Image (cartoon, rainbow, N blue to C red; front, side):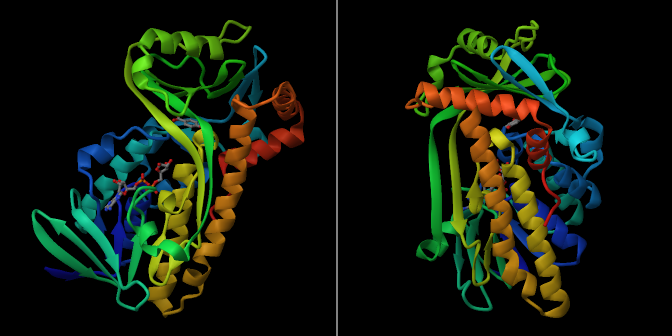
Length: 392
Ligand code: APR
Ligand code: PHB
């Protein structure tokens, strides 16, 4: 079956769904194709820190009601090392900007509801998605649904299909790839336990990194550095709690509250950039174009910034037939991406133990942390990056 639309969006993660919504608000047609089921996309446990710009965007486009009710605004965060916790006043250092803790799956839920309310197409569980002719003015996307083959003829394809999607490989050798993998992973859990601190705690302990976060007043989210090939079967709940308490407990007696573990998983750590973010009429956005290690909490926010920029460029394209914003989409995106890459790499390097590190390296890490929590200039630099620079 042949269909047509203005923008074919591959992937219904935060990037694809937000793009579809931004285009809808400007009267631009789109079809969103997702190969997973709606339940899978909603239940997938991912990141949970929204920058100020992401929160503002959700509100501006009318999908922020639940975020405002249930999201947890944090004006600061803690760094723990050498047994002490040190507070950083994010809002005070950035003229009132803050972060909001709200699960990525909640963002996805809100965006799916908004999409469904528009009546515009959002197809889950499609198969065999492939992209064609994007170097011409009439690109096409093929897919199967309920056993039937479909073809969409469109003006533009948005590759919002994440790191393992098909859009970036379709551009193949035209891309330059920059990549770094880290010699460790994060073991993450969700626990039914009330958060024992109102704000996040990033900790460097001699046994490795640990992070205290949360999802709601009754759910704590915790992470600890582990080996990249670690088998989750080696981590019974008691071992996880013991390790978390050891790495997070501070000399003032603070430690996370314990409760039943409801979810565990292991996430590899990688920095990845594909340049440019465009080939002809195919534009990459979000994890399809770049991956940051989760230490800086930037992945979801970078994806939102990409689609905000892409939507503005498409509004110009359809409103005036000019392509100037489409032509600068990649360069502007890469500037923001590399800013986030540098920050995420720096946070990751400062807070993890490395197998091949020397005693000098570890003392330098501690000196980095010491400087961070004692210099207003250093704290301000951390704060402006952590809460995120305005969308650009
Ligand atoms: N066809 C259709 N959909 C696909 C295909 C395909 N061939 N391949 C992947 N997808 C879907 C995935 O199932 C997923 O729902 O594309 C979506 C991509 O979503 P995300 O991986 O969430 O990526 P993105 O929207 O860019 O959001 C970035 O995700 O990994 C986190 O930390 C990251 O928070 C950041 C966010
Ligand atoms: C989370 O709550 O999932 C989280 C918080 C901060 C990070 C990464 C993940 O840096």
